[in-house]
Image 1 (cartoon, rainbow, N blue to C red):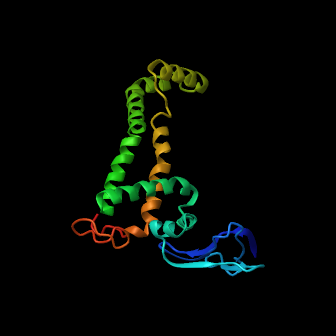
Image 2: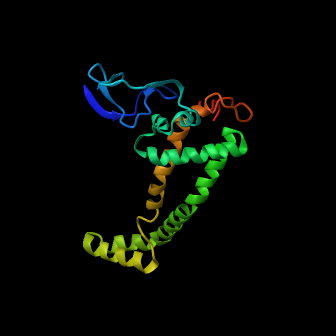
Image 3: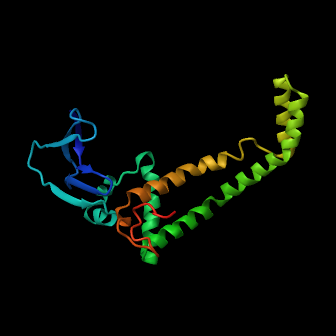
Amino acid sequence: IKRFSNTLFLSSVDRYFTTLLFTKDPQGFEALIDSEIGTKNPLGFISLKNEANLHGYIGPKDYRSLKAISPMLTDVIEYGLITFFAKGVFVLLDYLYQFVGNWGWAIIFLTIIVRLILYPLSYKGMVSMQKLKELAPKMKELQEKYKGEPQKLQAHMMQLYKKHGANPLGGCLPLILQIPVFFAIYRVLYNAVELKSSEWILWIHDLSIMDPYF
């Protein structure tokens, strides 16, 4: 059994819904988690030494509903290692929804905004890849000329890169830097109960499920 002091809320969650108990007392309460029964379904207990006021909530993990009760309860909407960043993405998505009035169009505008923000990285990556493509014949010549001499080959390759302002990592590094952004968007869209049963256009009547045709 694991003990947690000064706990403000204790919850059980799945993808879209949560059951939780919380207190507005800044000192919190002691929570006990018994995970021996199974990591998939651990049991949670509350230990109170003194009288305390506890409040409960059973329902969807709707961001605005939870925030209206208490901002701390939005922490039950968990996105993994990138939770802090993903929450910012959802706040932007929610703002766009309030502006356009439809979650589908909000996602489209979010995608456009993200692409515009990341365009400098994407462009830099494309330019770097194009330079390496243009240098490919010269690189091949060096490989043939210094075959069996890896140190000389490496030295001349670095000179070639420096002369033409190319970077062998310049093509993939900008793409790698974008991965956390797209992963955060994926986690937000996957966990957003707001998308459940939300219609968009044509045959799309539920944004939370996979498109049956594409």
